[in-house]
Amino acid sequence: MTWVEHAVWWHVYPLGFTGAPIREPDVAPPPAPRLDRLLGWLDHAVALGANGLLLGPVFASASHGYDTLDHLAIDPRLGDDEAFDRLVAACRARGLRVVLDGVFNHLGAGHPLVARALAEGPDGPFAGWFRIDWSAPGGPWPEVFEGHAGLVELNHGSPQVARFVGDVMTHWLDRGVDGWRLDAAYRVPPAFWAGVLAGVRAAHPDAWFVGEVLHGDYAGYVRDSTLDSLTQYELWKAIWSSLADRNFWELDWSMRRHDEFLATFLPQTFVGNHDVTRIASRVGTEAAVLGLVVLMTVGGVPSVYYGDEWGLTGVKEERVGGDDAIRPPFPAQPGAEGERVFRAHQDLVGLRRRHPWLVGARTRAVTTTNTRYVYETSDGSSSLTVELDVTTTPTARVLGPGGDVLFAWG
Image 1 (spheres, rainbow, N blue to C red):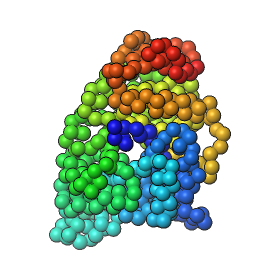
Image 2 (cartoon, helix red, strand yellow; image 1 turned 180 degrees about the vertical axis):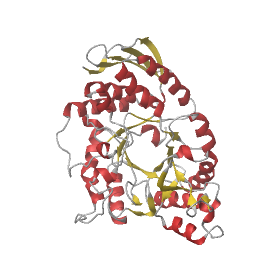
Image 3 (cartoon, one colour; image 1 turned 90 degrees about the vertical axis):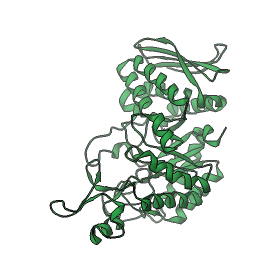
């Protein structure tokens, strides 16, 4: 097994976690770099059972981190190179892998290369980095990401852009990280990643690359891009929706789809991340643990979004600042919040650790009704039985081959 097959990620959005200002100037930076605040939480990640830290954006940006201004500089709101090195070293000391969030579909509109391209015109050396309408009313206008004027899309047909992305990836892999989450990968032609990753992997053959893809031909995208994994949004949606609507038929359908994906790659699985309403807000704390049962008993590379291990709530809204509730600041040190839910997370991550074959397990429905779902999860030689029930109070059990109860909830 490769190291990725043993990975359980603790996923953190650093700007929110550390309380950095998102839309206002950083007029009163703290005496210590904000990134140091994560140091006090690494033992919490280990106690959870995680062995990897999946970080949201840490590079210099204009606001929320996805409008990058410099891919080779740590965001001043978080700290500097030395703070980053301290974090990586502290992770290494605890056996935690580190994956960074790479925004390579677009740049912040204030990025110096965008300004140069627009200022130097269509014959300038950076004009080919972007797709610019030089005759647009009101002046040249570059293509932007999904209507967001602050996010200028790169031209992925440009060899210069490919070299730039490869150089950035290699720089931070050289600095000690283990892989990349590729933001908005679905907007990038698969052939671009295939070309870039060939060079990056030559220097870092053990690095892991996961693309953010929402829907579509997952297996085909992995094949053509040579990415290792994709974000499994289909399963995420089916988990919370089945629990909220009391419709386990949807989950069963998605589990069968998930098995098809597992035949060709290991999806990155989750029930929460920095872009979605927290599962406890959608289905309640008790049923949210049932979602975790699914996450930890199916194939894939799972992640736990910070705060979900306590049953934290938060609703994403489609407005400016609408992500703030799902990206909250955390204190300097862990407290005693949500101990019962945290213990359930520990137990289920521990169960997965004791059954490492689950990373590639396939599932088979035993019983399916609107409110009760029983499935067998197996690698062909070992198996577990999982029972989920939302008929009244949400309950779950994981049973060993002899019927012994390995986990129970509700």
